[in-house]
Image 1 (cartoon, one colour):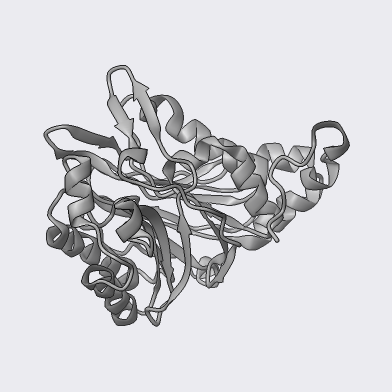
Image 2 (cartoon, helix red, strand yellow; image 1 turned 90 degrees about the vertical axis):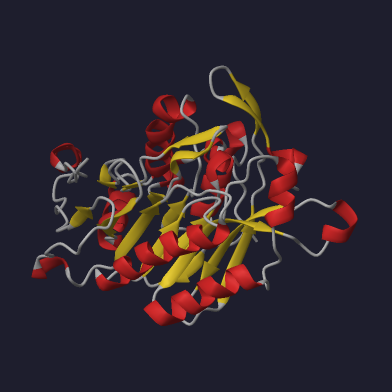
Amino acid sequence: MLGFTTRPSHQLLSLLCPGFQKPRLSVLCAQSRPRAMAISSSSWELPLVAVCQVTSTPDKQQNFKTCAELVREAARSGACLAFLPEAFDFIARDPAETLQLSEPLDGNHLSQYTQLARECGLWLSLGGFHERGQDWEQTKKIYNCHVLLNSKGSVVATYRKTHLCDVEIPGQGPMHESNSTMPGPSLEAPVSTPAGKIGLAICYDMRFPELSLALAQAGAEILTYPSAFGSVTGPAHWEVLLRARAIETQCYVVAAAQCGRHHESRASYGHSMVVDPWGTVVARCSEGPGLCLARINLSYLRQIRQHLPVFQHRRPDLYGNLGHPLS
């Protein structure tokens, strides 16, 4: 199926905020094996990000080939940063296979991505690597680790998922992430990138607004939620939660997602997207593996924060600090 794009509607903001200047944005969306689309010269100065959607399986090397193809396409399209979803490395059939396939950060699999970042000359958000941490020998459990690489292939930040998904949703099957995974001990301060300051999170974290508020108060301009949402929670909650996180923090939200059937017992919802600080979905992937592209306009973000200064209006004297600023 063909992808589609949406452009933010600013009529309401113009009515609420006299003098508001509508930003000049360019947003793109592509289907599987996309090709670069024409970009108007008026938007060339805005950073372009690529959001990749894949269907991971237990075959790590095939997954890498798929991700590498999309990253190279993102680079040819002019993106400065490409986002990959949670479990981009693999999705196993059971916890035992998950542990067996996991690797440390300095293992062979992640080294392929560091080489890919150098080859393509762009930053990579690797949204959920199955990491054998330093405590592997003691715990025999892993971390769900969001790794951020710069264009030289260096690891500039790591965030280990703090909220583990232990749920039983009728019609979707049970999920007990803690059977094989340890919760991360802390949040990661937002990181400066060519697209803006990025706050790192993973999937289930989006259900906890305290985390997004903490990242926003620490200076985040882009929140990223790489995910593998299920077929029941996806239609009900996916877009609603992402738009809510964007509106309440006045940040861009980038959500790369798994899609389709990974193996006989698991499937994911897909619908990767980018949401702007007004809550508008400005780019969305079509069905199946592929990518979508979006321009990040930080001037637009600052205008929204100026005209709707919600963080200045918070009342911690009444309800405390929901999401303490990071130190």
